[in-house]
Length: 367
Image (cartoon, one colour):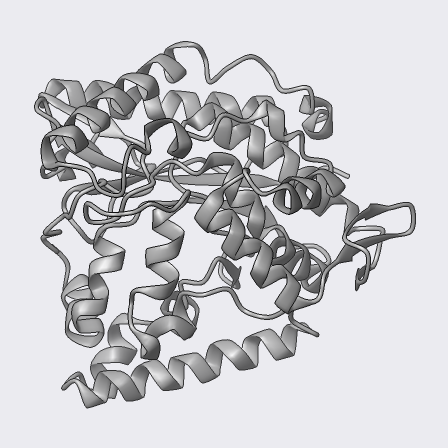
């Protein structure tokens, strides 16, 4: 089965010295480059594609345009899960200002976290939701930032901060949700969260009418797995921002698992791919594996064994976090140097054509 797939990649914009800077002008260079709600971040978005070569070509062309536009403004683009040290994150939209008013100090996480989002065309929706939830530990394959606001060390400081540091009231909008039993169950959860969000907003002086003008139930939840009604896709938001070639490889590997849900039931039991089913663990077991993946990456044997059961070759990935983690904190000067080094890696990755074709290209062929 071929699944139509799209990728969104959030990038930090820095100046020639590695300091975060306003990147909105870069977004003017292409219709698929969009500013985020903080001025120092933008997002590149591919069109939906039903072959990996087409997805690679699209990703390559957009990123080339973004890099050229950044250079024209004496800026660089950085694919890291966090900027390593704290960003003051100036917002520039009314919706962003409302997030600040509603989340309060908890909005710092959104201002200091950058991820990658993979959209899969909806087919067997519940099976896809359950499978992508179960693949949460695969974030360890591309973890890129061990520090959040200058301290660490987690393999994915972004996932740790985004899910847990927004405040207890807001974790329901950012953390991993239990498996869904049906689409109606998922939609009920989204509606319940939107009601809770509206209530929290009211408590902070933002009226329900203003919330309704700027938010929908669908875009209020920011969890690692989302059902997108408008596209329509199932969106996997677990990974850090990372090098595009590694994200393409991860997309191919995850798509290979998702494709099996078209013909196989997804059941709680022995995790992994089986002849007649896709097995997923009990949710509490999954949470433990995700926590280990976030904190220690691919180091724990249970994480590697779990991913291998789903067909991932962990040795084929080179996550950045363990290579740049050096002590339990990072200085501002070192963070800037690391950001510039990752900007260099991005440009080399794009210049190489986003790496040679994956051994799994055949999964996407025929389009």
